[in-house]
Structures are given as C-alpha cells and as structure tokens.
Length: 104
Image (cartoon, rainbow, N blue to C red; front, side, top):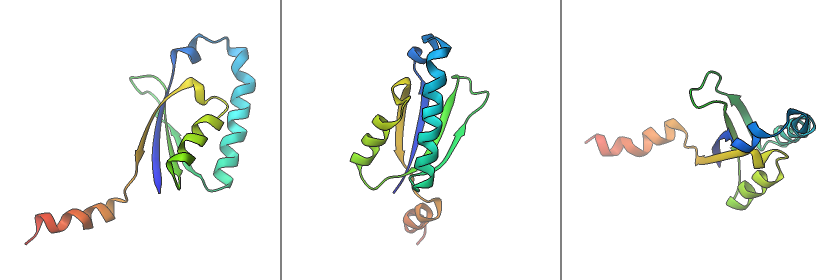
C-alpha cells in the first residue's frame, strides 16, 4: 500500500551546528537511495518556497504499520523531522468507490 509522508525539520535540526549534519546528510542520501532501489521509496520531493519552511514529501510502498515505524527509525536523520503519514488511494479507484453514491 502506498503512503505519503510529509516531513518538516524540527527546531533541533536548525539549531545543530552544520558540521554535524554533513555526515548525517550523506548517510541519509545513501539510505534513501537504498530504499529507492529496494522499491520501498517510490519518489521524494522538496516543496521549495513553502511558507512553513522546508517541507519534504515522500511516497512509500509499505506492507504494514511495522514497516512504517522501522523506516522512520532507520533513517539516519529521521529524528530531525516531524512526520505526518497518510495512506494514499489511487484517484481512479476513489472515483469508482464514490461514483455509486452520486449516480442513480
């Protein structure tokens, strides 16, 4: 099942000295590439110019809630994000599900 994870950095991220994050960002990049190659990470985007600061959108393929939890804790910089996680429903499936409610 596909899930959307929306992430914003915590204050801890912005208060930490930049030199601390060079290594962590490289580890994060390698980890994301591994997730993409395994088929778990479908895509990732940064919403540039967002009024709330950096906001990252990740599209994941998860089989269980345990897998979601594991993914969050494995991310080398996962602790620097506030996460929102939502199940994603294909829009065409959604239309098929609601269409009977609006047609007679």
